[in-house]
Structure formats: structure tokens, C-alpha cells
Image (tube, rainbow, N blue to C red):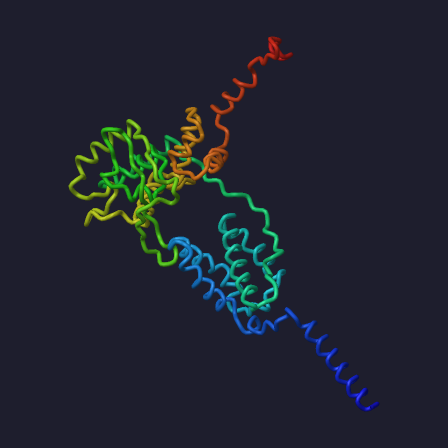
Length: 350
């Protein structure tokens, strides 16, 4: 009898020990794959998943930006990547890129490591508590009218026809991809409007052009009024080039759409000859928005004209503009006016 009790006690003790060990290990996988898998290998899986869930141009941007991560961590085993390693990396690259590029690179890194957590490669994401360093957003100033006129003078002297891109950018505020995709069918001379409904872009991974029969956002499909100066030059340009290509900006040799890289090369050539710096093709879009704001056009109307998805984006562009002497005079006009309350002037109101 005692032997039976002893055996039962032994069995119960072993069962208790086994249960304790099982409980301790519950939900705690070994994560052996994280010790065997490099970040590059995990990134391949992540990119394969992303390929079918984002547009081609975004996918290309992700592949291009991953290089910043690969250069440091590509060959590391993902289990060896710690929070302080990621923090040191982000602190080091902050001065080599814009704020937007830094944030997007970190987003990609964090998303790849999150896949590792979900698939039990690692227990926790080392990017989780990393603090992004403060970095001022690089402000691109609007192009001035004087810069536009000088660039146009140089471009008309140097280019057979593609100088037309400059007035299209300056007088419509369109994105360069929208301008390059414009055809003569998009121009309504009678009603003095341009129909924006497609775009030309670049796959940042393959550097190949992509034609899209839609704009960057749903708000991008819009009608833009034709400024009288632009209407005048477009009429002349149409008569001279309508039989050469359906595209307003086009390649001289075959009439096909002008590639973005060719346009960029032309623009930089014009900038060098005109001795102008500090502006990009996108600067004319900022100029257009600032001009409309100063003219008193309602913000929500401007937002629709330029194809912003919300007015906050429009306001953010104008907020980047430094105060001009005209701005200061306008502010003084309002602040120096007497203000009355119940018919009585304020102390400053004479």
C-alpha cells in the first residue's frame, strides 16, 4: 500500500513539474528562425507581399529606400538587431536625407521587422521604441515671375518646342507628371479650360516610365482654368505642332511622350544657362498656389483646382512661403485699422 502511495506521489510530482514547465514555456516560441534569417532575407518576403498591395511607383520607392537599411543591416541576423542599433542608425542617417525620406525609410524598416514578429522570427520589434530625431522640413521656395521669364527666354532659345512645359507649369500649378501626359484633346480652347485626368510617372526601382490613365489621387481629376497668357501661347503652339504629336510636350524624333528624365535634363540645362538655383519643376506649383491665395481665391477652390485631397495640404504649401514686403504691408493695413466695439473705438483708434 505504501509503495502504491509513493508511486502516486512520484507521478503527481512529475506531472506537477511537467505542467509547471509547460506553463512557463506557453506562448514563448524559440524564435530560432530569427537567429538564422538575415534582414535581407526577411525583406524579400515583405517586398513579395507588398508587390500586390501597393501601386508600382510606390513599390519602386520602397525598393529604392530599402538601400539605406540594407547598407547597415542587410547581412545582420534579425534576432541580433536591437533597439539601440536602430536608434544609432536613424541618428546617423538624419543628415544625409530629407525629413520625408528619413521617416519613410524608418517606416519600411519597422514594417519589415513587424512581419518578423507576426511570423515568429523574433519576439518583439526593435523599432518599437525608437525615437525619430527632430529634423526641419526642407522648404522649397516658389519660383518668382522674374525667374520664370528668364527660364522661358533661355528655353525658347534652346528648345524646339518643349519650352511649352514652363508656361504650362507656371499658369496651371499642375504636377510635372500631369503636364507631360497632356494631349491636345485635353485642351478646351472654347471653354478656356484644361482637363487633367492622367499622369506620367517613373518607377523608382526600374527607372522605367509608367503612363497612368488616372491622376495621383481621386481629387487629381479636375478642370483647370486657362490663363489668357497660356491660352495665347497654346493656340500658337497648337497650330505649329498639332500634326507632329498628340502630346503637347513630346520627343522630337518620333512624337511620343517626353520622358521625365529628358525633361529634367532640359530643365537643369536651362537653370545652368540662366544662372538660377534653388528651384525645381515643382516650385511653379507652389508659385501658382501662393498667387491664387494672394488674389483672394477661397482655399477650398484652390485645393480643387490644384488637385489636393484636402485643404490642409494647400495651406501647408502657402505656409512655407516667407513673408514678402507686400505681405507685411497687407498685415499692417489690417492691424493698424481702428477696431470698434459697440460703436466705441479702441484706445489705438484715433
